[in-house]
Image (cartoon, rainbow, N blue to C red; front, side, top):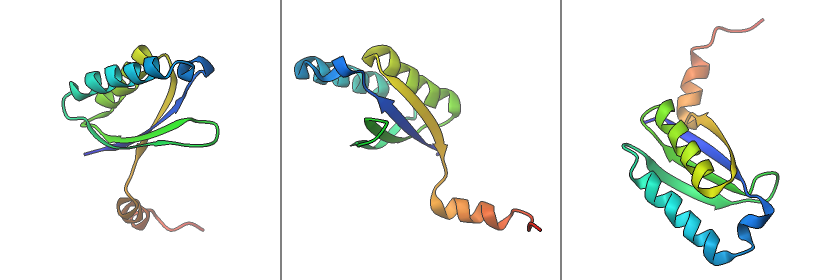
Length: 101
């Protein structure tokens, strides 16, 4: 199943009230669980230009887009979503690329 990396930026006010933040996180998780074929692999809080990195699988790009839009809509955050290829799969693709000059 295709894998996706979701990068999320939280607005400063997102964590001012921890109880509201947790409630929003639970609402988002509940809605994503309802999406057919989505499998959440991991979530990390990170330092840098993004606050959260999530990795999930979805059956197609449309479903991955629905995941991102659900998070944006319910949590009021900014997201970027990237398709991800496992390393071994990437090496296989590299092996099929015509040699350069």
